[in-house]
Image (cartoon, rainbow, N blue to C red; front, side, top):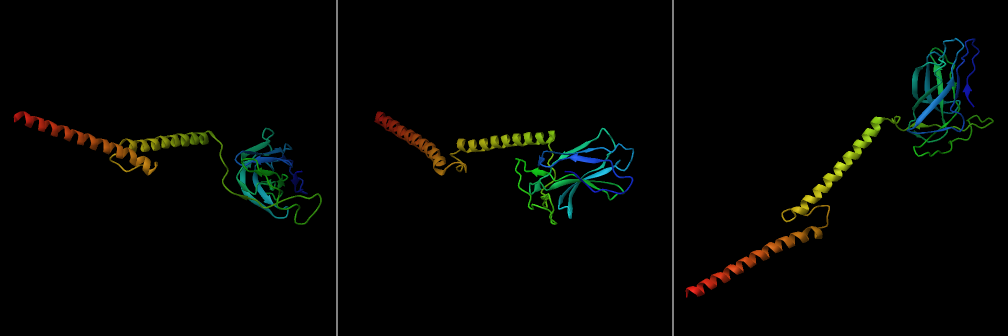
Length: 233
């Protein structure tokens, strides 16, 4: 059901909001769309109108943000407007559009519809009926914006790719950093990415090998010296 405050003026608007309708859900970060039937009566009343996102009860509506201004509600080729759904709390069917035009207090509204979480989660409205009651019951609640609208564009993809490249680059750098200590482990401290035992074992082996070779060399030299002395005698 779409709502419009009726006017007794002879210039009553011919613009009619047609959606979203009851039960429609739009995901945060995705595309939100409002549709209307333009006023083609010749009146210029809706030549330039403002589109707002509202929440709250029928008696106490709260504007969350102005989505667009200067929309032409008399152009028969323009019957909708799309924008990026914002992050909100709660994710529930407690949001609705309001349209107004300059110089008038005769707004129009859509019914309440839901903004879900990016993964599609929706909760029930906090209140089952309006403060004053009534039938049929009209659930409602007070929502709020959590963040600026999420932009889905090529630049976002580029940023993601850049982030992936940066991550890969970081991983490569980390691998290189770990590899260097393993090569020069004899002269450097053990890498923080490996256990002390694993880091110290190669150093011991390398140092021990060098020491053994030095000792063997010294022993061989001594034997040669003794042999040379024996020949001289």
